[in-house]
Amino acid sequence: MADKILIVDDDLDTLRLVGLMLQRQGYQISAATNGQQGLDKAFEEDPDLILLDVMMPDMDGYEVTRRLRQNPSTAETPILMFTAKSQLDDKVIGFEVGANDYLTKPTHPSELQARVKTLLARAGDRKEKVSSSGGDGSRGYVIGILSARGGLGITTLAANLAAGLLSKSRSEVIVAEMLPGQGSLALELGLNSTKGLVDLLGLGRVSEVTRDKLRESLTHHDSGLKLLLASDRPRDMHLINQVANYEAVVSKLAAFARFVVLDLGVGIQPFATKVLPRCNEVLVLLEGVPNTIVRTRALIEDIASLGINKRNINVVLNNRIRSDTQLPSSQVQDKLEYEVIGTLTPAPELFVQATRLQTPAILCQPESLTARQFGKLVDFIMEREALPR
Image (cartoon, rainbow, N blue to C red; front, side, top):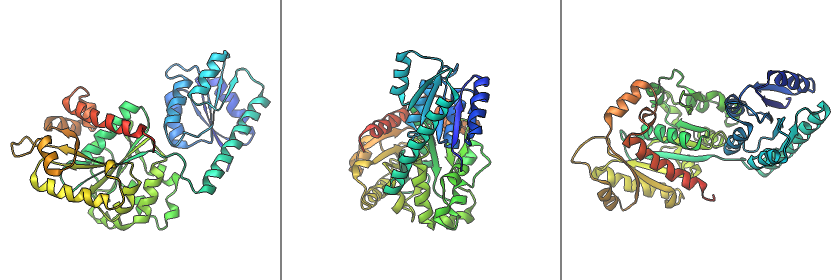
């Protein structure tokens, strides 16, 4: 298969001439006319090389490069900056933000072809080394969310945490529902496609769970989030035992985004024994009710028994209903004998509004108390992600 080159340039003449020249050399060409479109195509199409202009009106090539390097799926993609900016300082900035090579316009076609060929050859060597060593390449930060019983707001936490990570990091973020037959995100966010997870779990062989198949299964939301949606048809629940497919899905998701948030549902499902150890962070959700606290303590012990360091298991308190019967965070911690890293207070009107607007609640009212509470969780996750792994 021909190598794919993505050309990002707001000059249509450059796009046409350079694209035609490289196409005649046998390369597959994709084009984008601005920085954001370039990012979207890079994340969706997984090109083998990106030819990137620096001077673009909405987002310059330096910022595009920074964002490409922050995303696991493009962290190693060769970037050749191709620009009229010829000062030494401009080149230095280009290399500092992550460009692999730098060409000044205008340049002779043979030099451009030679640089492209060299970068693609080096990238091919790296991929071969990773493949022979059995490595998965760059991995995003995977956050699994679960609870000891249902009805505590796991999906709501997953969607809003992901939206907060997207806003703060300005990087790719994926939310994945892991329970076939029990999906609810599509309904809450006004989406029609609900079978992404079911299609992947229904594949007969694990080898069929490919990057391309996974990419096709992702749904894009207007907020910028990418979603792997579970069906809401109860008959699909039998797929919960497709453990090998689950492992393949989660492993590949981690190469598509900087952050992957998994809605793991209630308790430790059959697939969770394999998926939880792949998580960098496990969030356990509970409410301030004595019985739930007892069950949550047992769940934490069961998660730890899978070989997961308790340092990577963290508790979030979600008091969704205004009630004097629910315990405050300090008392929950005492009874649970485990630290609570974040508390979410009741905001029913906000979440009703979010459902009506078909968007995560924190995006409806970014200055609300709820948004600030999620913001603290986002800061916690990003601080943890920055630590050596």
